[in-house]
Amino acid sequence: MSVIEPQTITLRDGATLSLRSPEESDAQALIDRLDRVRRESTGISFGPDDELPTLAWEQDWIRQRRRDGGVQVLAVAEDGELAGMCGVGVGSRVRMRHRGVVGISLTANWCGRGLGQRLMQELIAWAQAEPTLEVLSLCVNSDNPRAIHVYEKAGFEREGECRWGTKRDGQYIGELHMSRWVGSTPVQPSVSAPPTGARS
Ligand SMILES: CC(C)(COP(=O)(O)OP(=O)(O)OC[C@H]1O[C@@H](n2cnc3c(N)ncnc32)[C@H](O)[C@@H]1OP(=O)(O)O)[C@@H](O)C(=O)NCCC(=O)NCCS
Image (cartoon, rainbow, N blue to C red; front, side):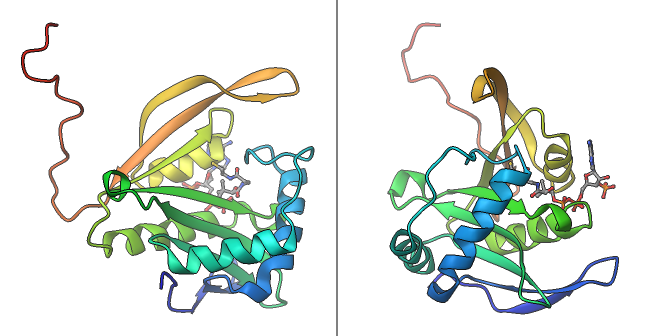
């Protein structure tokens, strides 16, 4: 089971939130939260014109996430508001199990208060304790400087950019690929050595 031990955190402004993994009973609140975040922020790929998941789909998604190799974390305010959600998705294929893909989004009233950085620390600590995980990767719109700053501060490095990553209101927005090593060996592997005998 891929769930975190529930804990309480305090932000620098004194606000306290509980961190826990989502349960099936959170499904409708998660759909409502997604609907809110997609209207408040252009930082996520899910837009106002996309179809929201059904309750059954969301419940199934939560069930699967609690079983698979990744983790999902909810940040819940004292009044029960879902302030944020983040997670690491890990593929089931053997060739992809070394890599976790990070996602994070907060509702606008919780942005800029240190919660994003606190959640990134949580995901990194979780990933570092997973014996098979070696790297965390993510994609971020190049016009999202706050998110890029948070990722760089958490140790993520820029790897490259897909120039036509997102199309928003007729404009193309670059999609920046970033990654951070979380494996137990400090040595990073060399990237794609050419096959033996290959001509340059
Ligand atoms: C991106 C996101 C997760 C960051 O979390 P957050 O709680 O708002 O961020 P924090 O308050 O922890 O930290 C913000 C940092 O960015 C800095 N920052 C804010 N605006 C910035 C800007 N325009 N350019 C550069 N840095 C900026 C802040 O100064 C702070 O850094 P510091 O602690 O070194 O001073 C959150 O804003 C969010 O969910 N946004 C909407 C959805 C989204 O964009 N998700 C990311 C998808 S890839």
